[in-house]
Image 1 (cartoon, protein in one colour):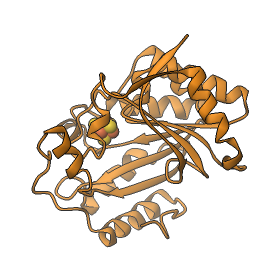
Image 2 (cartoon, rainbow, N blue to C red):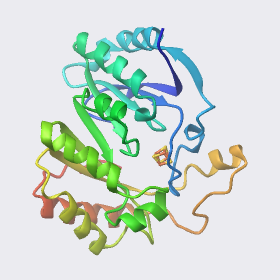
Image 3 (cartoon, protein in one colour):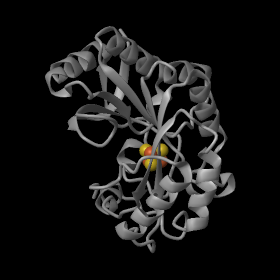
Image 4 (tube, rainbow, N blue to C red):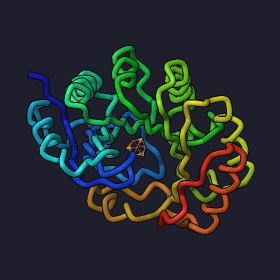
Length: 247
Ligand code: SF4
């Protein structure tokens, strides 16, 4: 019986993919992003073990809420750090006609992770910084593996939504957003790019874990400034602006 280690399940998620979604947060992540809002999902040993059978039972119970657009998003932590379980869930969802998405940093570039990633209807891929050196300083990992995943998605024309957290002092300049647009412009598989403002709401989680907040002096990103950067990016990418109305 295949099992996996999960942190939690959000049964009526509204931001991690289209429609109403059941979001499964996998436990464990190989990265240590300085702006991480879910530090409690990083450690491989935390969370709880569940069988895929139990997970699918929960997912199927939520089915009436999915409507025509919604479905399941496997998030984390890093779901592709548990590729066998992810592949099994995705196959089971596909057999049941449930839309699937993986929310990933792309940091796990293994044959099993690549195989699992290919099974999702949609990839929510974090590009954490367009400069690989700064990306490594910010997260512990350069850009290469995320770009490998994006190139594979392009080759198979798998739908991708890019997410990028705007962190003051790190990734909040128009020049950085231009660099991001240049990096992503060749990829027709990208359907939307969301800039997400860095916030400090995880301070309490870090305190509870007995860890210092990694960016103690970095303020939350100004939502108005982020909105302007989003418009700049959408113009550069000729993408529809989906951010209107988002907090
Ligand atoms: S990839 Fe996500 S869960 Fe992992 S450290 Fe970065 S922000 Fe946190």
